[in-house]
Amino acid sequence: MDKATLFTIGRVTGVHGLNGNLKVWSFADSIDTFCQGRSVLLKTAEEEQGERFIILSTLPHRKGVILSLKGIDSRELAEDLVGKEIFIERDQLPEPEENTWYWEDLLGLDVIDHQKGFIGRITHIFPTGANDVLVVTDKDKETLVPMHEHFVASVDIGKKTLQTTLPEDY
Image (tube, rainbow, N blue to C red; front, side, top):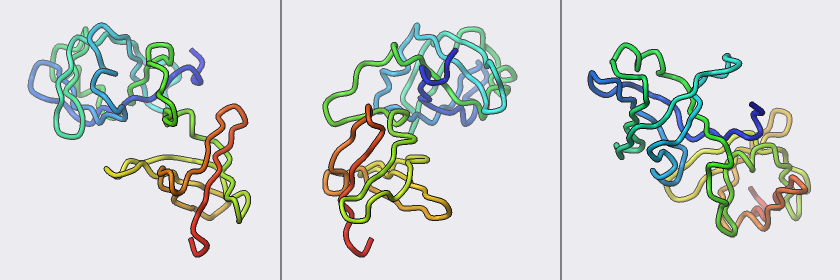
């Protein structure tokens, strides 16, 4: 499976109860991403292949979800999955709405400020509740860019660029 076709939608952070349910930190905007019957791949960064599972059920839980997977029916089996990331194939996701993007599409984009020029590449993204924040890295310097219309002028996935308008003293 080509990693470019896989999107990370969450990470297993713990177990819930005795029946194999997983606590998942969701990277998805909607619990619907974890819908019943969907095939997901669980693996760590060190694993080449990972393991496929079918989602049996999902419940909202705090800042994530409780996930039940086919074949994981005990606490012991669930504990073996803690720390693994959950991937889904892109073709199982809806196309994003206008002026919205999947995080995986933004990672690696060159960030160009209208005054400063190239400021780096997007290396990771984190949510803050109000806006996602892009971490832009160039050599040893990191710049945090809020994903907000006041700072992000345009995104061109095809050209792999994101245009910003940062304050002068930023």
